[in-house]
Image (tube, rainbow, N blue to C red; front, side):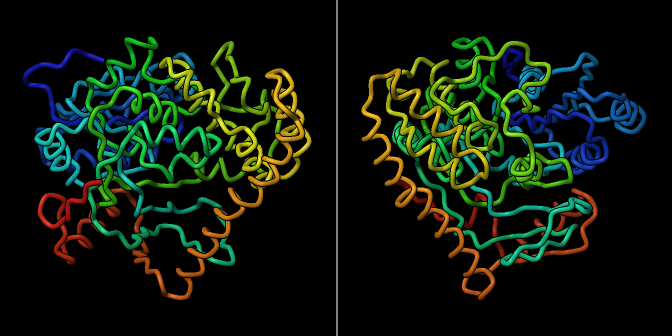
Length: 412
């Protein structure tokens, strides 16, 4: 990451992309349509072909775009590290190559700067499903490609205590971090001084196998003022090869850790010994979060990890993993001279009171949606991220909503 200059942009939007050229082009076009000199767009491309590079050279003449093509294969985390390294903005926001942003994100960055905010985390209340994802409808949702969904949001800005949220993270089995008020770099704004502090401590901006979760916990270790909002400043997208879609398909794939695509081009990787050695969403997230805490020297938090609750999450969410999860759970307890009978009791309790109740809560929220007790606005027929951005802006304008005018400020 370059040293900040007096003329540095206020905000760097950072995209790390690989082999998703049509989506990346759409994201780039939608962001560069924002006519604001405070913006910098950084694109790090590690695709097998140079199609995106050719498009950028032939079609884009915008000094706010910083594009780099790296031919040698990079790991998922390596691509993200190379991307953030290029950013020069005072604040940095990482999004996916199938995502977009609300132009008001620049107003949010200005607000964060004037209020000495280190991190503005965004709770996702909008989402765009690209055409052709192959995602099937369920009992509770009717899936239609090309649709922007906008859920009810309060429009709050709320102070968060990063230390308290890290405590919740480990005591909840290092799972469901998105339900916590942790800092976010992925779909969040983070001051560059936090990223530089992480780099000085660990030698990189990202580690683990999931860069967004690693960054979340690492930033929590160094950030001062952390604020969350549910105002839609970014637009998460889901295409046929999105992480959200592919992670959902893990249930149909091998559970062997060595088969995880996150390990490609990574070389030797030290999996956290506290996490069951199975390939699931839950274990990948837990490993990355715990590795972040270890890298930042927060061994005190790691020692509080609720391993029975992590095991419960894995067992409830995935078929065919129970034996391996239990094996690693009790093997770890034996190595730590912990009472295995007590561990079994804790696991059963977690299955009943932890993830089980959380699952019931999600089912209830789905029922509220289909019965109209909780509303969602769907805007169909959108074919590009530019269309999606215009649709979101139009919806907000119609409701008279703006980030810097209408939001109630809520503090703890």
